[in-house]
Length: 411
Ligand SMILES: [Zn+2]
Image (cartoon, rainbow, N blue to C red; front, top):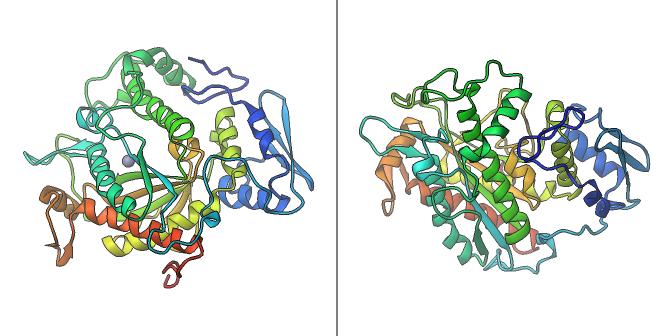
């Protein structure tokens, strides 16, 4: 594993980027497109100005050390880009099977199963069934797959059973964990921690090695699958949100419940100091997938908000920035939506520790409709899957030039 050097820092478990990979984007984006994507999507508020200078005909990008990469702009828009996914606008109209010829990768978030406690995606109220996000996302993905297949999609799974896809384990990552704590000026560095409620846990090598395992190594391996094996036209990352629940032994339920979707963007200046992050941001920007990602996210937000009746979540900090017109879609830089090269729709639906969700979770995968708080609902997995499938069908039907989709008309 590589240890970041001070001159050219890298995020944990990352390799130095191959900047030559960006050569294929020479002359593919116009000055105005580049500036718009940089300022309005990826580096809002001038976050990249230390490293990227935009001239009339080119952008100069600081790569490694003092080296610079010169990206020449296209004179006209629409130059083809070499990529492994297909633009839906190039597919023939198909109103019955709007996802025909489209490969969709489902990426159920987190590990679930016996790993849910370690990844802090686990809580239990009394003797009720524990809530584990990684198992909820898997059930949702399995409910979503046949719906997408019915619409014509070729569905592939980034991970399909509880547990990690990475072969690394926390005990393999202790030296990387120590280096990561050191780079964040943690002092003193502790060997281990006493349990989930230990206030000092984040200063321990054990906790950091676990985090590097279930978050970083796992997403890196999923990204390898997406970009090198599955090569889908679109990846859907499925997640359930949570409000802080306090002590997992005595968790708190809330009345707050919400929905939002995330598209890659809003990189912070502090994140762009890492060469790998800077490279991945440029890759994402130059692939020009933002318009498609936003269109898909808006369409899914529209249908999911109708099926779930959930209100939009609002970020309070500056790590996310609102985009589009629905009020449900935000740009935010996450490891998965940064490393997956193809368009990514990242869905955060329901608050797992809301009172209503908790009751609906305990009701399980029932058939038909049941009443919760005076509203009739399908079970959570079917409702989530219906909303995503409908949003994708609407988007692809419209993008392929078929029947008019009911998108954005009534916002
Ligand atoms: Zn999640």
